[in-house]
Each structure stands twice: as structure tokens, then as C-alpha cells.
Length: 274
Image 1: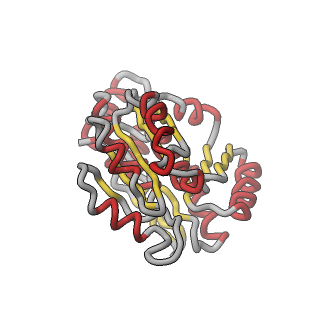
Image 2 (image 1 turned 30 degrees about the horizontal axis):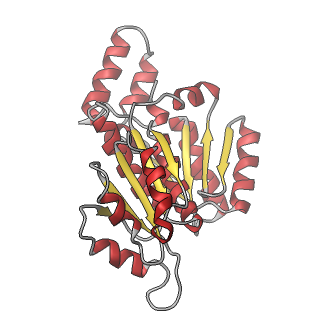
């Protein structure tokens, strides 16, 4: 399990004099919860236990709570991701990062904000595990969900290759796109409307395919419902996540890719690699 492997790494690092006693104590805290007043309980050890970092959902959070949570995780773990971040929230998080001497990065398409404690942690985050994830969208309206998946898969150490706007309505666009992604260990396929594309991809490749229904469509069963139903009824073998669940799809694909690349027992999120 990840926690046992990480614990072994920590103890070996301490025994070799590579990390201090205080650093070892911090890293061993895989089951630790940090309290922020009465508003939040931070799972500071999730990346150690599960290989997936805790991601803060910014949607519907009061701005002071959001800044406090993201700031504490950044201070504790060195790095924090927040999802579904609005432009206004990103502006305030950027101001906070600048004031604290942290590094703030915002992906407006994916609505993901990354706060990093310092350049040393950022350099560790650029290390790759060898896992490769391919992300395909049916149309340009699906890119916002695909970018959310991309950010979390990269955060978990994967190389992410993308092919956008390759849907079934113009099927001739698909084959060159898939050809460039054939070395991927897992595929994330985002599609709205009737949600055909994941079934088509699953019929072409011998790797796991994760279908993401996107809330694009109108009229009867619009807003992703038709896409979700179509993917669930697929005659091809694929996994389906909830509507617009880019984070879930990206994290799941990264876990698969890292296992396929030989990192299943010691995969770590970017903030824990070093």
C-alpha cells in the first residue's frame, strides 16, 4: 500500500541522513487531520495514503474560508490545488499567494488554481512518474472539463497528451488524433450531447477508457443527461464518471497510468515527490 511504501522511504531517508527528524515526523503524518477553526478539517496525509492529493472544491465556499484552507494546505504540504475556481476567486488567491511569497498559477479553462510554497517544491512537481494519460474531447465546449482532468493527472506525475475537437460528428478527425495518443496508458474521453465518443474510442484502443459526460446539450435530456445515459449503455467496455467530473476522471486515469508505468506501489502526488 502507498502509506507503507512511503513510510519505508521516509525511514530510509532519515537513516541515511537525507531528511531531518522534524521532516520525517511531518511526512509520517499520513493520517493527520488539520483543523481550521470550525469550518474545515484538512486531510493532510491523503497524498501519502492514496496517491491522490486533496483538492479543495472552491465552488460555493466563502472567500475567507477558501483562502484559509488553501493557505494552510500550501503551508503544510507545500502545494495545494483548488477546483471550480472563478476568476474573482483566482484574483484573491493570487493576491494572497503574492503576499505570502507563494507561487500562484491559474488555469481559467479548467478552473483550477495551484498554490505552491516555493520554487523547490515547484521543481519537485515537474518530475514525472512515467505514466501517460491521453485526453480527448468531442467538441471545444468539452475542453473546460478536459482541462480539469489534465491538471490533476499532471499533478499526479503523468505526462498528458490531448486531442480536442475530435468528435463523432466529424469522424474523420478522430483517427489522426488517436494515432498520436496510442502510447497512453489510459484515456479520458469527454463528450456532451449524445455522448458517443467514449464508445468509439473504447472500440479502437486496448487501454482503459474513462468516459466523462459533459453538461453540453439542450432540450430533452440536455445538460449531460443524454450523454451519461448513452455512456452507461455503451456496448464497448469503459468506465463512466458523473457529469462534468473531470477531476475524478483525471485522477482515476493517473492512478491507472502510474500503475502501468510501474509506480503502483510508490506513486506520489507532485507535492510529495522528491
